[in-house]
Image 1 (cartoon, rainbow, N blue to C red):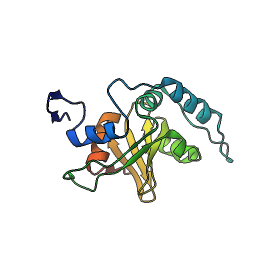
Image 2: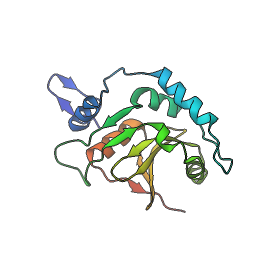
Image 3: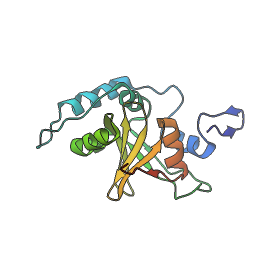
Image 4: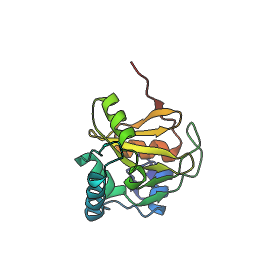
Amino acid sequence: MNGRMTGGTTRFPVGVDAALRAAGWQPGRWDIKQAEEWADALRAHVSPGGHRHAVFPAAVEAWAEFGGLSVPAATGPARQIAPSALLLDPMRGLHLARTLGDLGRALETEAAPLGEEPASGALLAIDAEGRVYTVDHTGDWYAGPDIDSALAALVGGVAPVRLTVR
C-alpha cells in the first residue's frame, strides 16, 4: 500500500502519510514511556462487572508509534467511503473492557483499545496478532491485517468489512 511522494517512497499512501504527519507522526516515532503508562492504566482498570483489559505486545507497539495522535481524514478523493479522522488514544476504550473481551472471544484472540473515530464514536481495537477493528452501534468491523493497513484504509476512505457470526 505504498504511495509515491517527490523524493521517494512512503510507508503510507500519499494522502494518509500527509494526514499522519500533520498529526505529528514521523518515521521512527516511538514513545514507549507513554505506551507503558497506558498499559499500566488499562491493566489496573476493572469494570463494575469485573472485566479487565488485555494488554499485549501488538497493542503496546501500536500505542508507542501512533498513540496520542489526532489524525485528520486524508484529503483528496476517497476510495469507497468518507475518510475518517482518528484519535489514537487507548484510554478512549477504558470503560469498554467487556466489549473488547467479547470481541476477543468471538475472534478467538484478545483485543485491546486503540482509539476512536470521533465523528461516529466507533471504538478502534487491535488484537494480539496486530489486526485492527472498529466497533460501533451497528456492529463489529475489520479494518485491516495490521496497523499500517488499517490506518491507510480508515484515513484514506476504504470501507471496513463487517464481521459476521459463522
